[in-house]
Length: 79
Image 1 (cartoon, rainbow, N blue to C red):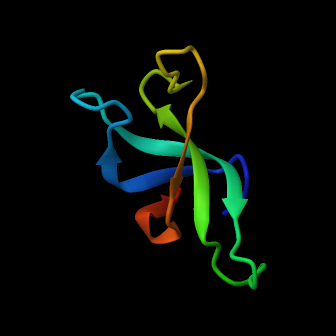
Image 2 (cartoon, helix red, strand yellow; image 1 turned 90 degrees about the vertical axis):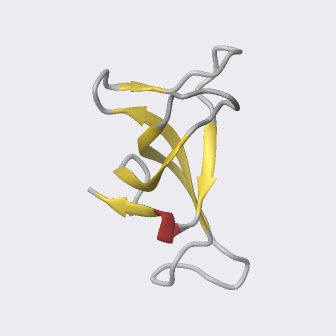
């Protein structure tokens, strides 16, 4: 996995409470390593922009910002 890669979330994710809108894809915005790890070990977290495959748009929050969310690597699949 690398920055800019498209990934699939193993479980749909809703960025807004009480919303039925969920996302199943994301674009990698960053990779977080634990203090004592670096490639080729597994990263601690993957930071994503949520991505709508149908509209080909990145999720924008109520403030108009492209919000980012962190997931564990085992919660994602590389496409």
